[in-house]
Length: 307
Image (cartoon, rainbow, N blue to C red):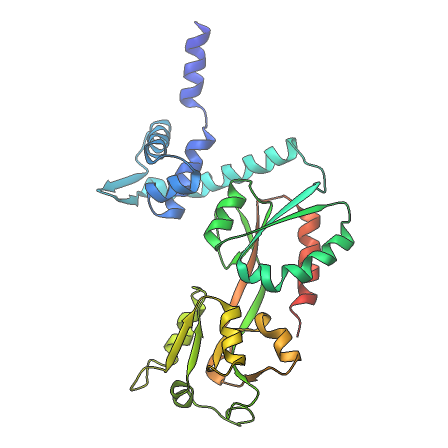
């Protein structure tokens, strides 16, 4: 038999990890276009990989209706095996190409709030534990950082609560959202503050886009008139300074106001309706990487976020 023919036959019946990866991404992202963006491929390339996999398996994995795709029963049965194949492949690759335990440079990606309120306390302690490691910090949105970890542009990411089939994601801390006022505000010292009273006050509304902020909005839904939101901002530093300047009161994450609380510039107001509302920050990495550094970050994190 001709050797080239034998090679073609082997390719036709072998497992193609790229095709399987495209299949998992389409399911996770919900569309071929979004999967292509996540994989840094063109949409036709993802389509070609899915078609190739369907030929290898001799079945249809998706039903296509215009731009909408629906996984078939065959696709549902194949999905857990596809996920297991990718996980096994990546673990094997890491084992074969085992990196040194500590890199010369650790690249950290994080949201702006983490860079402002956590990294300045985290890095000095990391430097004490790993003095020979150099650090590079980049900031961005959660989606930006997820993309950079996937693209190997950063090693470790600090992001909002997120999951991804190709990343290990673990909760690092939860930051309670509380109502804060300046020290001379009439609410300070009050035994009970109602939602109606809060709604009448000038509000500086900080919102970072996380789903937890929807719960703050819902607190006011039962009222006859909307809350008195006079200023809206996506910048916690601005919101904090406006409250100190007596422009209003504001719901803020606890980590953003630690210094002002210690100085007596801001005062937390007890509002039972906000109990349990918090912003969650996760650590994301490629599976199996940077174990020692991750353990150190988790250990240091318990100290940083404790009251």
